[in-house]
Amino acid sequence: MTLAEVLLWKQLKGKQLCGYDFDRQKPIGRRIVDFFCKELALAVDVDGSVHDHTRERDEQRHQEIEGLGVTHLRFWNFEVKNNVGSTIKRIEEWIRAEEQRRGWPGRQTPVKVRRSRLTRNRRPTPDPSNGGELPPVAVSQIERPSAVARANASSLLRRGRERVCTANIQ
Image 1 (tube, rainbow, N blue to C red):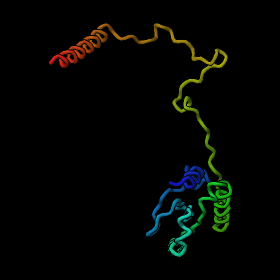
Image 2: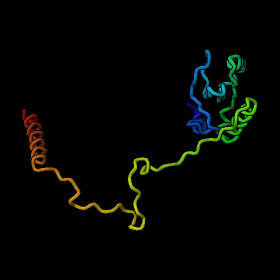
Image 3: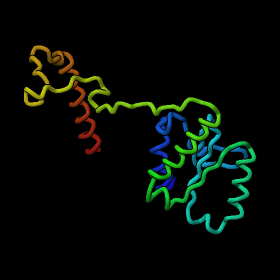
Image 4: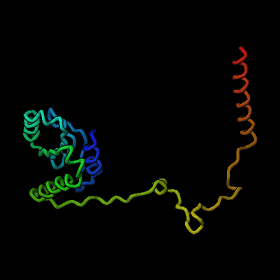
């Protein structure tokens, strides 16, 4: 993906734009578009400077995609990189107009609650009144390896060292 595509994808993925699901690099007929929303039949492409020399082919591609009943919005890399907000705003305006045209109620973007790594793993949050440390664990609560486990571990280590030493001698 180009930088412009990455910037736009960050705003489209996960139903962030008006609550609609977008896919990335989606085949439409014989063509592949950068982003596609099936529910809206909306394709979004980000074109780079190479498209300056392929205008006729791009126009033919645009006609093919729209001939399949898909609305095809195109943006320039430069435009997306320098002002991704205006690109998102134009896509959102198109979506709101389409919702109105179809008589659909306007969707709201689902609110995502940002969770820290600690809350994702469901670990307790440190208590700031105690200097930010977790409550101390009693020594009796710590599991210590049994004597048999310690003996097995040390014998494995010794055998490993003996193999290394004998391999060096031969």
